[in-house]
Amino acid sequence: MQNPKYRRVILKLSGEALAGDKGYGIEHGVISSIARQVVEIARKGVEVAIVVGGGNIWRGVSGSATGMDRATADYMGMLATVINSLALQDAFEKEGMVTRVMSAIEMKEVAEPYIRRRAIRHLEKGRVVIFAAGTGNPYFSTDTTAALRSAEIEAEVILMAKKVDGVYDSDPVINKEAVKFTRLDYIDVINRGLGVMDSTAASLCMDNKIPIIVFDLTRDGNILRVVMGEDIGTYVGR
Image (cartoon, rainbow, N blue to C red; front, side, top):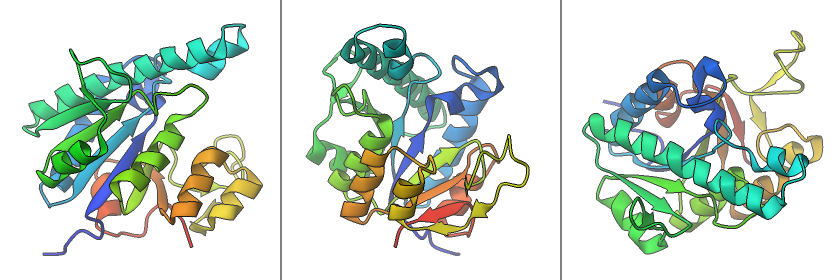
């Protein structure tokens, strides 16, 4: 039996991905599918940590654009990620997987505080760890959270789950002739503004040599495929 290519990964989920076709809220079928796939790779010995956004509930940037204080809007976004994290935890545990939500903002009634060594210990014990509330600081995205937590827990790769099957030179929904990249260097992503992740997150990955794989979450089984080393999506690294 083939062994997984990666042993410790961070799966980055956008909040919008949890909404499915509705565009807002949480779609039960989507989180159930994610849970089944994550449990499948965890049972193959892969240590899985997850960072989830909150855009299906609230986007801090959008709030600040309407005149709200940016820090306040970002804290609201962090709370939205906690809601999504708890929904994912419930779905995972219904699949029989022990899961821990660790929040960068203390809220001991619903989540553990984020402590690096504790997070690593949970992973070593085979538990899925969900990092909630971003970095705990305004002005930082959940992409940056994924890059930072990857460096801290020494993850081998960031799996960027998207609604498209990789990185293109333009929006493939708008431009039917958009060209898909199979491999990119970090600096290409930053200089060309390709939208893989924000420049702060991409720079952090580049500095710490953390590879990124952008792949299609909507196709069932893709999480397993990418962990096993199948050549799908777009690889960002050196």
